[in-house]
Length: 343
Ligand code: PHE
Image 1: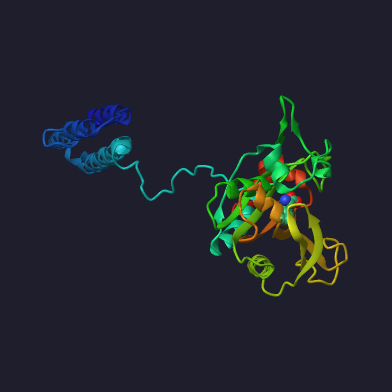
Image 2: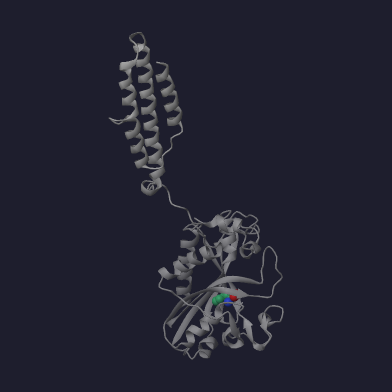
């Protein structure tokens, strides 16, 4: 009996220290301890030598030992299968993937796309042109006289190496380039960046963005201009917004007008945005001046057209409640990320 106790104690110690790394180790353990010629069976065989009065106690000890070995066997099986898991089931296809940071559209681009898409629905194509422009395309062809204040050193950035080059002050240079192609009719919108030598503040910057439009064909009238812009305003600001035209002056259009919409913030009753007038100025427009058509080899007796131009930053500021134009170009991600889902 004592011998049996000693043997069990030794085996328990031995078994307690067993570790396996794979299924083969588990099977070796089973054969050694629980197999038909294994240790548990052998110890059971020794029951015969135990004195009759100790048999009950020895039986209990052996059963308990057998249970101990079986528990260990189960534990080893488990740890071996865990060890193997990376090769088989670590790939959990139901887990969400690693998320990559995705950028968001810039609020100026969101507003540009909105404006452009409205005109695209009316059949306007999108045109593009250089930001560094010669004097002729930015000023001369547009009937801007020599002494016009927009040409002033204070308003325009000139390129030092070549006095004939400027950073375009409006996207109207592309109007000229489109008309020069000689393919009529012309019906384009021109989104792009423009530059003016202005003091940078919360309300103005030395560069900003515009969308201009140009339509040249036979019999294009001021009524077409108005109807096109009415459609734009309805799509952009809603059907209840009112529109008014005020006579204005641009060298490249005659007649010229500024277009206002009833303030979409206060509904026309007067607020800070509309400076208590109930109206917000959104664009300049007019019928293309005959001199401009002539400059582009288009016969003004046969063709007429209209043009319009608007800034993008101002409506974007109104739509998104942005109070400082400099935020658009500071590239602060905390600012830019806010427009991910804006349309
Ligand atoms: N080019 C003008 C500007 O930048 C806008 C404009 C375009 C006005 C077309 C009338 C017609 O201010």
